[in-house]
Length: 280
Image (cartoon, rainbow, N blue to C red; front, top):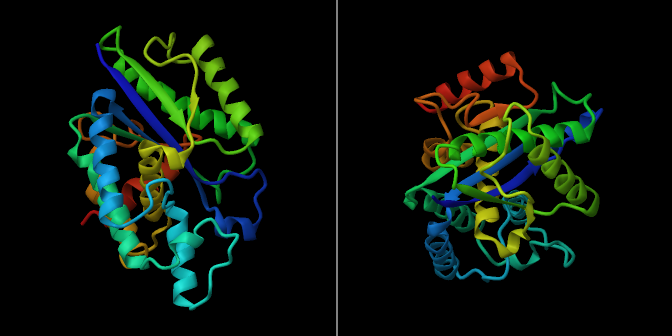
């Protein structure tokens, strides 16, 4: 018997009927989940806090993946960051140094004995007519199914799942659809290996959610990449610390650890080709 923690975060956004301007900002919606053995949480937290000390970052604040690219723009254009920006406190930090901090944070995954990453994504350029709640439920369900299937070899295994709160409406919906899936089942007849209620955990309080954010960001770099030169740092992080730890069946990750939402053979084939090309 073991207890596991699943830390899950979203990257990007999904909007029904998204317009061209919105697509430039949110071409993809991603949910990234890191599953670890609870016995290794203290180790992960200790290593993460040590990194923050090494980089002289405040322990009570987080460096979100999205902050990096905004900070780069302000530093590149030599513009003062407005006081109301949440990343204002980072203005004295070098962008490249913060990138290395994120890289080192992702590398902590490789130091764990048990770790599995689950990634679900929606290509908003192709899929944008479905109701928002339908897509959100689909992403959550795919994650729940894979955790359940991974732990069912021992009836006493249990996973506790934590997600980053978004807003009051979404938070309520996540709680409701999680319990609905848990109580009623789906292709998984019974969810016997995940806790009956999802936990909302502020990202700046949680090492697991922060690392899940970096996982989603690195994966988004792969999705957005159009050649081997652009998004290089993010794709490098992906292949060093994310790709080796993605849930897989034998050597297959597509359909097992990476799932397009909704299922689409053409989108999957494109990503298989891209990952193969970028990995060389």
